[in-house]
Amino acid sequence: MSDPFGKPPVEEDVIPGTETYPEADPNDPYGSLGTYNEEGVRTSPKGSDQGTCIGKVIAAAPHEGPSGPCVKLTVCGTEGRFNGRDFDLYISFSQKAKFKLDETYAAIGLPKGPFVKSRAIGVFVTLKLKDEQYQGQWSAKCSGLLCHPKGAGFRGTSNLPA
Image 1: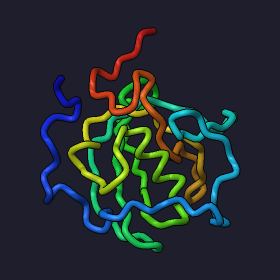
Image 2 (image 1 turned 90 degrees about the horizontal axis):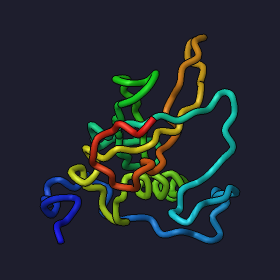
Image 3 (image 1 turned 180 degrees about the vertical axis):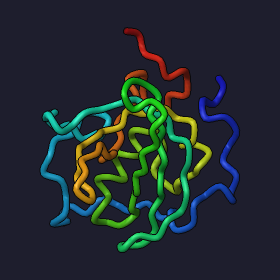
């Protein structure tokens, strides 16, 4: 059986600072209050200022955030109103942001461990969008990722049946 992710990752493909995957802390005061499905993806009610769209991970780069190493993901909308629009999402490897890290790894279909760019780039996902105001203008921003409707790690065509 072939590997759906292709050849094994090259060591230099690992983003620096992501070698240690944070373990869950049951006493963490920043832990989640929400509910999660079987895949570990957070579910929440949809409001008028929230929505989703299908997108493809097109870039992953190291970034330094206020809490340490991060990964900056760029996801391009591939269908509907947001087709062709790039959304940036910053994923921190800090203990406080472990819920977002878990959600992102589950959506992309990555095994827990170092963030390997070649395993993420080219994967289709569902973007969670939420309106945010910036300099007086409202705009849809990516607040997180969910699995593509055809499954985590999906690399096929983006078009879904109507």
